[in-house]
Length: 630
Image 1 (cartoon, rainbow, N blue to C red):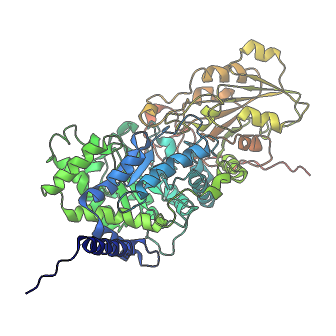
Image 2 (cartoon, helix red, strand yellow):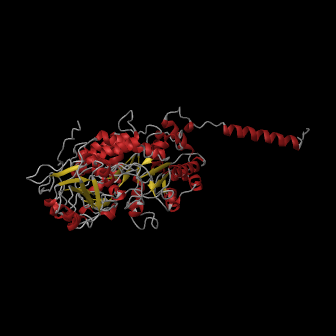
Image 3 (cartoon, rainbow, N blue to C red):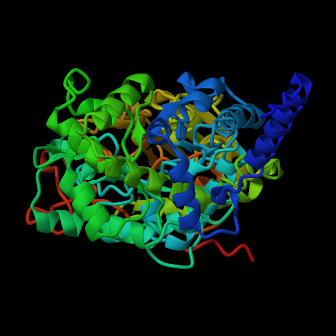
């Protein structure tokens, strides 16, 4: 038998041809998950069939931008990045700075083996509040005073546009906590002490995400919308003595009737994600509450989005969670939550979870359920087709239409608590053509105080350089007649006030900015020298006092000297809304979204309580008619 020897050159040619064919076949391989014409479930199933354990755990991981790079996104298949409060590309970062940063991280994700796009999350609590020159809306406590669910939906829509303008596609909002004690430092993040109002205000989800074709199904309506996040599940507004991250003691009926209704509506409205609370419920950390997260939220309420931990929430369960993989609370957290906001030490989390899966402490079915839900939200958002920033939206940041909407929200949220002494006619609305008026107080010309916490930084700032907007003083000066002399003094002496012969005075005082635990307070007093300013001014001239605060504060001792009293619950950048109602261009319509107590000894005190004896009851608010300029 003859053996024909193939020349080496021919053999090389054959091998090259085979390699070319193999490369062509590989390149031409059909990937259903990349085909937008395929049903979503088929796309998810196809993608998951291709994913390794490492890629699945990467999708369950969320990092802060400060520790994130292109390479980390690519190499670890990280599912999500976030900006915590004040976590920005640089101080006074431009819209372009944000887009460049987010797109760089997204390009890292798209360069990974499977090219799964990331979600970028940010705390857009009252507008796109981390971003310089964004529109800052009133905080939620103020929006609750409007009783206007459609207005709140529009605010969600405007917020989504401004968030998307920076390339970001996920907002950690709304907070649907029911604050039952104003001593809690997050009370201004709550729409009301009344769960019915909180339910109504979940309309903001329809603004953020758009209205889906089917109730109860997560939905994000295109490139001008963002995924929303209802938080903090559940009972965070009911902690003992209002201490942040403390324990909420309540029976099942109370939980369902007070703290849970907002989540019923959020799920009906198709919210994409739910964030778990730092707090405990009857002694059980919510991050480890498998019953309420898995059995109730997922199985009973049929929530179909994904559950995300709060910032480092998994670390709060036990200081030993990484030293002892079998710690029950840690495992319960992993059994319940789908995406973990690490946010810094991602390798330790990834390695720990990998070991738990490999050693059968966490099942692959648990991992697959989490990843399926995360991918479903990403496909619903359209990220596989449109992962990058849309630069056609750049004019949406701080757009005049949004500022006009914020101004409308301000004037509708202001609550008139007193208008004139008993024997006197109403003081408001004020005349614009006065000869000489005094504007006084620490909060009259301070944009930072006006906006409160969660504005540019986590805790908020003082001053007028943090972003763009209109202070109360500027708004008053713009509103009055050009011949009216406006005199500003932050802390005037009473003798000086008496000697100036003012027609009337406007005093703006309140709280300094705060967020979360830093805002927990047992005394709830006006920040110094606010009480003295009220006494010095209102004792000498007719005065209208504006309380700029994140909650009711002690005011009864000064009330007799005050002619008109207005509650302005952190109105945001558009101070013009305050002047609109002070001078009668619009009437006062706001109603208290929470009870105004007499003394802190009464707390907690909510409408319907047996010991209910407020200074101003829930729902109180005087009205005025706009001045007929004709």
